[in-house]
Amino acid sequence: MEIILKYFTEFTDTQLAQLQQLEALYTEWNEKINVISRKDISALYEKHVLHSMAIAVLCNFNDGAEVIDIGTGGGFPGIPLAIMFPQVNFLLADGNGKKIKVVEEVATAIGLKNVLAVHGRVEEIKGRRFDFAVSRAVAPLGDLWRWVSPSLRRGKKSEELGNGLICLKGGNLDEEIEQSGLQSIVQAWSLNTIFPEPSFDEKFVLYVPK
Image 1 (spheres, rainbow, N blue to C red):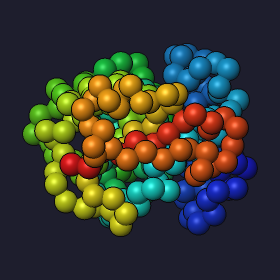
Image 2: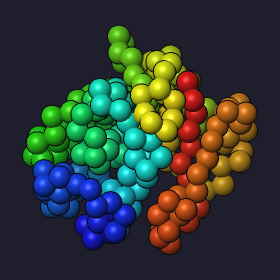
Image 3: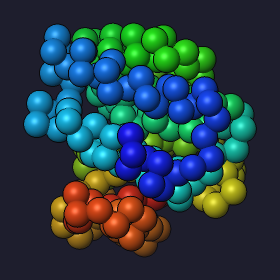
């Protein structure tokens, strides 16, 4: 938890309490369902919570924005972002029903009112429109964009970025970006320029505007 407070200080008492509860909840659930790599659970706040919060540094969602988390797994980046933006609506989707159960239980346990967890793939969700899509190492950039682009509204529901896709990625992304066909519009930020920690070397945030 200390590493979160190293980079973020303006939390309400409710947000602090919600963040502090995550370690015990994910440790308990991880013993039942492999939600997070066993070797990473001790570094939950750095490798999962803080990693997710990089999106918040680059994009301060406006109140009332609608955000979908594609392939949320156990709730990343969606749960940390929902804590940070209590007036933003988050839909966390994943094809793994057991992991969505964990998302529902964690959100309920910490009192998140702005999270809806859905068992299903993003391309199967009908009748919903979103301002932003977020994702964390789920699929190649081109696939993510193809799945979610039809559901994204045009506009600007943040102070910094227009509506679009924001995803957390790692490694050499040159080939992936080229194969996506989005190289003329995609923007990339190195994560260790946002949070200068060794674990974020060769990790990036990518943004594709709608």
